[in-house]
Amino acid sequence: MPERTSYDVVIVGGGHNGLVAAAYLARAGRRVLVLERLGHTGGAAVSERAFRGVDARLSRYSYLVSLLPPKIVADLGLRFATRRRSVSSYTPAVRGGRPAGLYVSTDEAATRASFARITGSDREYAAWRRFYGMTRRVAERVFPTLTEPLPARAALRARIGDDAAWEALFERPLGETVESVFDDDLVRGVVLTDGLIGTFAHAHDPTLAQNRCFLYHVIGGGTGDWDVPIGGMGALTDALADAARRAGAEIVTDCPVTGIATDGGTAEVTGAHGTVGARHVLVNAAPQVLAGLLGEPSPEPAEGAQLKVNMLLTRLPRLRDTGVDPRLAFSGTFHVAEGYQQLETAYRQAAAGELPAAPPSEIYCHSLTDPSVLGSDLVRQGYQTLTLFGLHTPARLFTDDHDATRERLLAATLAQLDAVLAEPLTDCLATDADGRPCIEARSPLDLERDLCLPGGNIFHRELAFPYGSGDGAGDSAAARWGVRTAHANVLLCGAGAVRGGGVSGIPGHNAAMAVLEQE
Image (cartoon, rainbow, N blue to C red):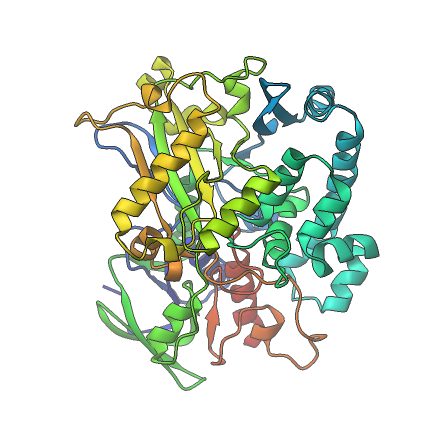
């Protein structure tokens, strides 16, 4: 039960963004209550034992960290760390009738040699260096703005200071840029994938949904690096919950919120344990969920489009390409069926209401970088985790006969993986205490059910470019920070805010700043 009947701030949802907001506001002396529907905090950023009787704590939903600003970690004194992956990616291919692969890592010589073997010259590697040099310069300029008031579009463009980069990332469909810079289909596909994570779009989508997704995937930390959370994703949310409690915030779990009433100055939040008053309400949930709590018409949900698969293996599988160690290939992002034309074909099949015949996916092994997610016995025996994220599987495909469709998609996805392995993946799967294979799959509709994500969209709604509509003059604090709703004292603090999406804490930080600025 909540300890009080009234608070300065009530936060609906104990995911990582809600916990960030709680910690900042409690540290600023506000009386803060967090109400969480589930029996634990963390939302999608949790570590769980997914397989009965097996001592492996998997990052079950969210699994890598890029967008979390070091500022938040330092401000809140978080006991949390990440580890950099030395391998960026490995993409299997067939060249000259023989198994091969494109290997990208911090080893510049090895990467250049791999590009030459796959593409036949140094041209694509030189183009790769120029292109990602450009995105890194953009990242260095854009990332610091994410924890500042929203810049106007013109101000952000001036801050980037590169008209060609602005045109490539903010104005033209990503496919135009990719096709003008790169010639090789495999290289083009590797670049495009960052625009399609959880986003159902194609390379030339005129809405630029793929551009917005791509931008958020290349600006993290000002470098674009994707890091492994030590101890799993739950280590972050456990640290955030601890920081919020130490600052004086109150967290109540097993308490679904059923309604919010506000007159713009004060509010009441009704949940499983009664009604509490608040000066401000921060909502760490999708805009559709907020509309339902307010009793207002709900906007159309943005459709999710991903398959998440968690696995535990007794060992890593051997690859058809004997020129690369599986421990290197799987420690970065392992691309499967993600050539440029393969991605386009999969998109068109899904858009026509069919499961992709060759489902694209990307895989990585957390335990190679951070074995602490496994019990000591499993580490000693050589067990490894695998996380697979499938693309172009929109929620609409699962509305009829959900479970059977998910199983067909899983089988087709694993078949694509098996095509580049020297042995079936099933030969490497561990078994749980009941003798069942250690593999689980989650569709967009599973995420809707489990995590209350409308349409299974991992970003809560379509991502937005990280700028405001005006110059900020005369805007409310909530508008300046990109967290406003139609009600002055009800703010979004989750992924549905401007500059939301991903595991970042940014909308939680920005909502807290807006509250403090309002007072």
